Image (cartoon, rainbow, N blue to C red; front, side):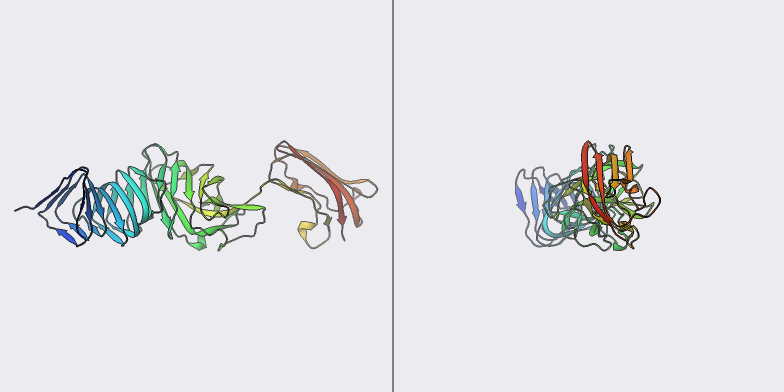
Length: 400
């Protein structure tokens, strides 16, 4: 005689004991609307399952040949396993300690993917496909790969690695765009920064890939768990201040390049926070690598004039006398040098949309073509940058 287990008590919570449960092939399980059924032990559904309520599991679940499993929540302290073929899930909730390992072909989430606490291990799976929604906050995360379907608004991928949530949100995607995000520990030997960054964190990287035509989208990432003080391929760049930035890999020069971005939800040490790119990036079906780097920033324009130079010395950077300015675009530049008799020995006056003042400077040669004698010379500098005027006058010692 065919077994029938009907669970249709509306708005009641039902608990099965913590012993393992194996339901036979002839058993039919029906969980009614509004019913929450708790499975405390390992459970195998060899028969058929109809779930229009919610399954809450504290242990391993094996749905065998069942594919439509409804709403499910994993909780408790122990590591768990989810077994089955392709599983169609409504709401997929993980609020637990430890790890939930997916031993399935694929999990299709049509409702909400909610990762409150715990880790979903999808590293050995093709992916989890979310056609519904994903939450943008929580300490839980998916470790491995996650696929999302854009429905017109931002798509959040609750990814993470190394016990840190590293969520990614993709905005401005066309409707019905299928995008995958893989989150993993990067290969240190491939993390080469360009000249604009101090170094790249080797704790986490994301690989974004679109299924179809390339898209141009804005990205936002959570950089919890990254080390912004130690880099395997670091560079010494002096600045008044530094900040983290999203960096993207370029195949043309095999280097990572920083995106301009806005930082939020962080502390003074940048131990965690969220970066939202100010510019969009192209995501292709070949994949786009992203990571987190430390970049120098200038809090305000820096204006500096040396007080000595040696035209014939061994240090190349000190052979030309010139001012140094950074932090704003220069539209006008004038620079003059005089000897002790107030005779002009060098002068330049430039105006343009973006004047590069590093191209100008006095090399210690007089207008006559002779070498200037050592001693004290005098200068004045005027720089117009973004409607602000910067001036300096002073003396410089020419050394031989």
